[in-house]
Image (tube, rainbow, N blue to C red; front, top):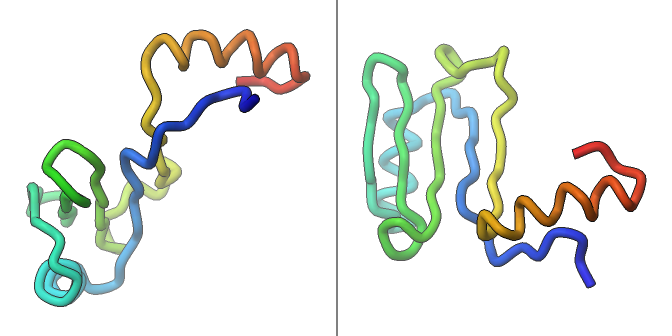
Length: 95
């Protein structure tokens, strides 16, 4: 049994060198739905599948929050997150 039962991928973030070109690629070539942009932060978000199911964030390399690690997030319930803390610690890991 998995320590943290993952139900799927909720979000992933990528750093891109040309945000406009990347938006065109993910929207026009791959067919992802553009969900939201924040022009002042040079970032765009796409839905993957149905809106609200999963998302992809594209951050311009010139404005990405480099002090913050870009990340992926898995789909789990709040109850599973809470239970995973004890399970991870029991396995000798620091959550």
